[in-house]
Amino acid sequence: MPFSDGPDSLNFNVPRQYTVTEGEVVPTVTCSADCWPGCTYTWRNMTYGDTLPNTGMLTLGRVNKYAAGEYSCDAYNNGNGLKKSTSIRIIVNCEFLVGDCINRVNCKFRKMKDCAVARIV
Image (cartoon, rainbow, N blue to C red; front, side, top):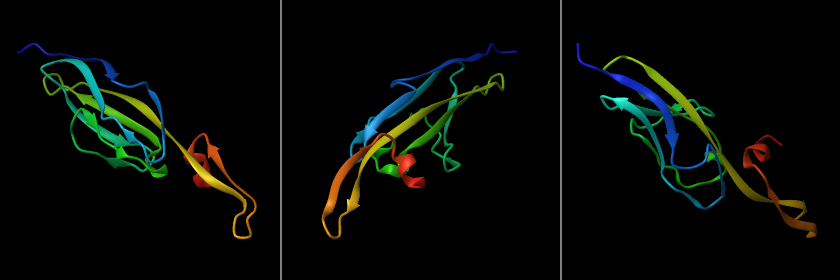
C-alpha cells in the first residue's frame, strides 16, 4: 500500500480575518496543507452556500459588500481519503449615506466597519 499523509495544518497567505474596503481588490487567497500525495482543494462560500472552483486559490478580485462573509477551504487527500477544513472571514468596509440626503439635511458619508451588518439594517 502506498504511503499517504495529511492533510495537516491548513494555512492561508493572508490573516484568517481579512479586512478590505469596498471597491478594493482582494489579493488571491491561497490555501495550502502538508499533504502526501498532494491534496485537492475546494473553496466554499459559507454565507451563500456556493462551491467555488477546485483550486487552492480564492480569487475575489474587486469586491463589493456582497463579497463579505465566511469562506471555507477543504483539503482532501485522495491517497488516504482524509479531509480537513478551515475558514477565513472577509470583512468588507463600506460607506453609506446617513441623514436626509434628498433634501441635503445632515447628509454625510459614514464608514461602516462591516458591510454585512449594513445589509441587514
